[in-house]
Image 1 (tube, rainbow, N blue to C red):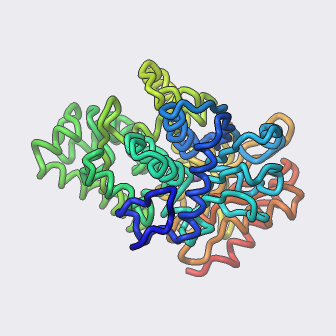
Image 2 (cartoon, helix red, strand yellow):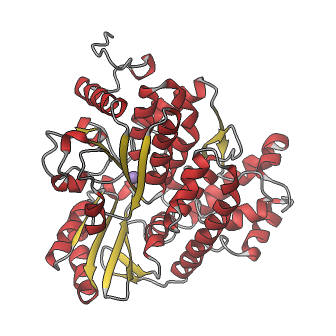
Length: 461
Ligand SMILES: [Mn+2]
C-alpha cells in the first residue's frame, strides 16, 4: 500500500486499518504537538483516562515537552474552567466528545476520546475512532488512540505497552477477546516480544485461595469474598490452597484444566451467559517489568483514579517505582469496597422492575464497577443494571451497565440515560453498553420508571 503521508510513516502492520482521513488527522495532531511546548492535558479519571494520560506523558517526558495534566470526572463547570484560553495545545483523553461546542480554540485541540461526538468537529483534530468507522466499545478506547498516537510519533513509545493493556482492560475492551485496532496492536506487541500470552483463569502468583476469594471477574456466587466457599471448592478439586495458579500452570496442567472447566461450569450453573462464562478462561497478557500481571496494573490504574489519586499512577508510569506500595493500598481499598457491595447485591439488595434492576451505592466512583460485574455474574442476564448514589445536596449520579448479549437484542443505554435524564430535567449519555446520568434525587423513581419503559421497548429476546 502506498503511503501518501509525508510526515508520519504508517507502519506496515497497521496498513489498511486506518482510512486516509484518519491517518491525516493523526498527522496533523502529531505535527501540532511537535510544534507545541505548552500542552494542556485533560483526562477522564477512570482506568482508561489514567492509562491514556500515562502514555502521552511518557512521550512528553521523552521529548522534554512542558505539559499540565488534570483529571476530571465528567463534562461539568470544572471541566469548562480548565479549558485553556491562551491558545495552548489541548489534548482531551477519554473525555470531551460531548463538549466540543464549549471549546474555543478548536484548531489547537486534539480529541482522543471514544464516546459519541456531539456537535461540530470541523475545526477539531478529531482522533475519535467512532468517527472513522470503528466500534468505540471494543475496537479502540481513549488509551488505544493515545498509544497509537505516541507510537506513530516515535516508535520508542512501544515501551508504553503495559499502560496500553492496563487502559484497554480497564475499559473492558478485552472482553470476549481483543478486536479491531486493539487486536492489531496486541498482536504486534507479541511479535515484538514486548509481552507474552498465557491462556487461563485471571489468577496469577498469589496463593490460589486468596486469588479466588478476591477476584471479581469471574465473580462466583456463593464463593467470591468468602473463605468457606473457597475452601469447599479447593477441597472438591483437591487443590492445595497455598499453591499459586502460576505454579499449577507450570507444573500440573491436568489440575489447571480441572479448575478451569470447574469454574466455567460453575458459572453456567449459576445463570451466567455462556459467552461470559467461557471468557473466564481467556488470553492473559504478561508484561515485562516490575508489574508482570496486566490485570493487576489495570486494577492499579483504575483504583488510583477512582480513589482520587490519579497522579500516583502517572508518576509510576513516569518511572517512579516508589509509588507501587501506595497503588497497592489504593487498589486493595477500592477492591474491598467493590466486593462489599457485590455481596450485598448477591443477597438481593436491589430493586427489580420489569426490564431493569437498580441499587444504591454510597460512593459514586464504585457504582460503575459494581454494576458492570453484577450484570454479568449476579443479577438477571436480561436486565441492565443501574447503580446510583446521592450526595448531600440531593444530586444523584447514575451508572448503568448492560451486556453484549443485551446490545445484540436491542439495548441502547446511551438513549435510555439521555432521554430518561432529560425528561426529569437532568443530563445523561455515554456508550450503548455503559452510560450514566445526573439527576435530582426527587426524580430518581421517575427516572427509573422511564428507563424501565424504554428498555422494555428496546429489548427483544
Ligand atoms: Mn474510556
